[in-house]
Image 1 (cartoon, rainbow over the protein chains, first blue to last red):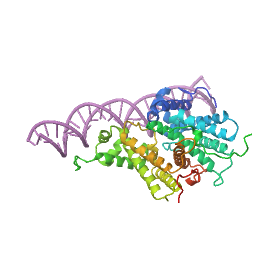
Image 2: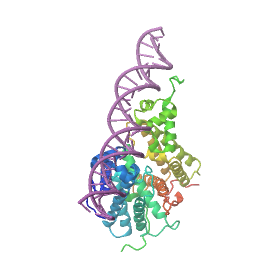
Image 3: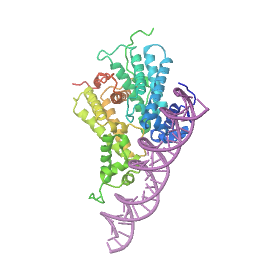
Image 4: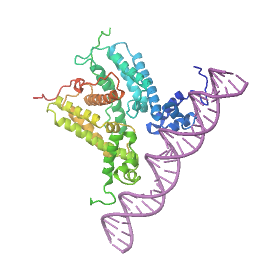
Length: 196
Length: 196
DNA sequence: TTTGTATTTTGACAGTGTCAAGTTCACGTG
DNA sequence: CACGTGAACTTGACACTGTCAAAATACAAA
């Protein structure tokens, strides 16, 4: 249980994840290598593989960390919004879009199939946390008469697709730039309790 | 202009793209390498790089081909649907989802930022073609009073997000599997001409 | 045939992930 | 205090990757 610097470096795991995120945001997914991360932290080239059981493990660790800031931004979006359901939902979505904008590589990574999701309980836990935020916010509204979860699926699909579309549109850099304020395409749902 | 087998192999470019797609759908993005594609076609390891100006070029070629079958499936979705606007839009979306389901790696590739979009005119052209299909189908409906393109953006966001969400949900394999028929979350829009 | 040009091959290089074997350190037990 | 014992890390090697320059090949035109 002692938490003093144990060996040459110390607690490598979090340092490697942090360095990995830095490399990812600087050089993108293609520039992320175990050896570069190792060099950035100042350890030998094979050290990361030992801690994460291969590159996939490092990606899992980075993705879990990415989900954490994802959840954090969505929470901040809600916290800074008015308490009525519509504003809460809009705030959540703004946090979602902020994450997609400011952490493009992480956003792509956490929704990527490049990672083989081993029984990494941490990642699954924090990803369900993100989904829970959405479910909780949608619970402020009347459920769709057609399907109990239709609201969640619709909102998540909308915001996720919109975030990806914006990225893609910017990437293609066509003259047809159709990005618009997100609340313009948010559907109307009836809140459970009147806003006051 | 002569199209006889010119050299050792012949028209390598399309063969390499086809092999690349095969490798991609079998081994995923991680297993796709220039050398493997070259071996599959039966040429030397450096031949692909010459035709595509590096790996990124091959990815551009594969992505363009992916967009073509993407457009094809959406077109088929419309063709096999009733002529009224709602059925046409639903058919288009079913083609969209079919592509995402049956060509997962391609779907991920064409919406990925891993590709540096050089002035590859072919890719941009065919990607705009896909967007046009959506615009044309949405043109069967009254435009949103708030913004001229709100319908397109909303529909594309919805269907794209839904496709990704399904993939992600399946990947995470949580007990919370919320996939449902897509038409349940399609918003109501008023068609321009009465269906008949 | 000769020339010319596009196509393909060959060989080399640095960088990658992974594995096996070694080294170094902290720590608990005698 | 000496001593192992095990975890953290290093070292060295291997196969594989993308890229490049130079050579060899094949076809078209003259």
